[in-house]
Length: 330
Image 1 (cartoon, rainbow, N blue to C red):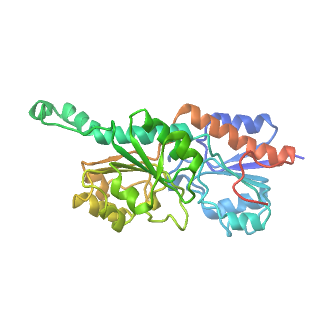
Image 2 (image 1 turned 90 degrees about the vertical axis):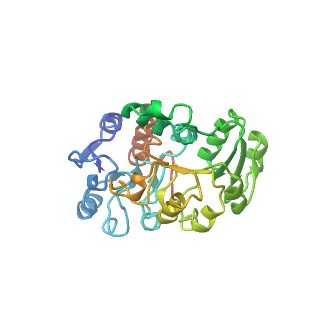
Image 3 (image 1 turned 60 degrees about the vertical axis):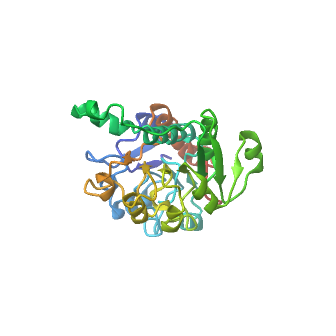
C-alpha cells in the first residue's frame, strides 16, 4: 500500500523531498508561488489543508500553518511532522485526542540559534549596523572619534529561559568573561555548576542585566513575559535580544521603552506580527536591529531539520514506531 504525504511548501530543502521519495512515499506539494516559507501567504488555505488531512497519511507543515481541530476534523493522517523547533501552531490536544503523533525538530537548531543571539548582542553593543550605514552614506568621517559603542567583555548577561538554547548562549558568553544570570521556570542547579551561572528571580534578572537574551518557549505563562513593568526596571543602558517567539515580548511596551529611553536598544529576530510590516514603528528606530526570523537559517541546520522531519514521517508510516522527536504523548 502506498502512503501519501502532503507538504505545505514547495521550498523546503531538497533533502526533505528526496528522503521521502527514496522511502517510496507519494508526495503532494503545495506551491508557495514565490512567497517565503514562513510568510503567511505561503501557507495553503485552511480548507485545502483540511482536505489534505482527510486524504493523506502524513502532513508536513511549518510555522504559519495552523493545524487545529477544524483542520483535523475529518483526519486520516497518521502523523504530523513540523519543520520547526516550535509547535505552537499545532493544536496538540486536538492531535492527541485523535491519536496522531506530532513530530518536530528540537536540539538541531541549538548552536545556530545561539550563534545568532550572541551575534545580535555584539551588533547592538558595537553599533555595527549604524556604522555600516555611516560608511555607505559617506558620513563616517563626520563622527570618527565620537561614534562609540559599549563593551560585552565582563558585562552581565541575563538569560530568560535556560533550555538547550539558553545553555548554549551561556557557554558562548563565558568566552567573553560575562557574568551570566538566568531565570527559568525550572531551576537547573547542575547547569549552574557546570557553566558557572547564577539563578535569580525575574525582577532581579531584568534589574541586573546589561544584555538580556530571551530564549524561553512561548506558552500561556510566558505570553508577554517581557512587559512594561519589567522593561521599566531595566538599566537605561541595557539591551534586549529576542530570538525565541515574538509574543513573549509586549511589542507596544517595547516601543515605549525604546522611545522613552528606558533601555538603550533591542535586537529582534521574531515578532508578534510576522512578517513585520515595513511601516511598523520598530522599522523606523535606529537603536533596533531587525532580522527576518533567521536564527536557524544555516545550510547545515536546515538540512538536518529536513532529515529529521523526513525521519519523523518514515518512522510512523513505514516502521510503525514513534517520531524521532515527539511533542505529544499518545
